[in-house]
Length: 386
Ligand code: SDX
Image (cartoon, rainbow, N blue to C red):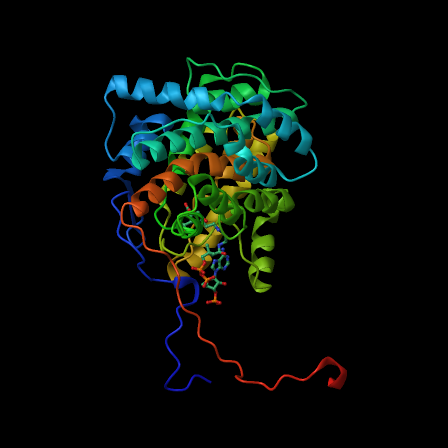
């Protein structure tokens, strides 16, 4: 029982503002999202993952020559050093893809060319571009190994999404699939102080290096309450198996107090605007895709309606970015265990941008915890302990 001296404990830092930012605005009540002042809808419709990464990092849209130069640097970083490829091969099949990615990012500095920079900010931007490109290259190469293929160099004339599919399959991807993946990466690129971005900033606030901070972000993203929900949501759809089983499955799960993955959000108390864009793709791919994708899509749309009827208005639990991603990634040919690593590749610009912004006015993050145990307990020598 808390007495009058017990401070107010804010579990999960819910509703706590820890810094100011100009990178992203999330309006959880209205279901709106902006990166650097541009709405997610306008960016998904008009932009590319490379242009959005530039916007998130630099705070403005690039001119043509700036974008071309930025893209060239990203794709050259996507071409992995032989040492990283050998590391990926040694871990292939021994760890989950998300764990291989985390390990590879930790090892990246070992394969980074030692360069001299004019100042910290130039160094941090250069490292950010290297990290964004390399994470994408690592995810693509993990995918290639899952397809029993070796590493292949990216096509320097194309972007990151195209090259992820190209490097994963060894074949030129369909333009429609590459475009869909590019939009999915835009939708996942940034989302204010989510758990993985906050973890990145906590690590970097000690003045650890950017690779260490991003590794912390990858560790946090893995959990099913955060980035890992996309894989769990697809597992649920596959467990349901037939659209006619959806209602009973959802009702039994809710009766058993289970969480339906891909629904609910700490900030959105209405429809996640990103989920709306992804849902539109589902309706687009429903016809003409494989039976598997058609079944998954039918189950997803049924589960969406059921969950909104049951928990939407009443509890503010709506579809989030992770719910419809599974059927879309499956349509594009991405294996389930690569969903969250792909989320990491998409979110790397957001992680880097927030870290660079926080370092502009760094403050070690060190909250308090309230001790409610005993004090000054007498020490009992081991031979006298009962
Ligand atoms: C992402 O933060 C970000 O921005 C994250 C993200 C990003 O882009 O970085 O948007 C990406 O992580 C999206 C969220 C992915 N996670 C999931 O889909 C996992 C399932 N969702 C839940 O576990 C939950 O909704 C959270 C974790 C996302 C948010 O939970 P909160 O804010 O901590 O809410 P809560 O756990 O306190 O739940 C409040 C109530 C509870 O019921 P009561 O105990 O009050 O009766 O809502 C219920 C919960 O049981 N609830 C759910 C539910 N989510 C919440 N019930 C069933 N299914 C769910 N999905």
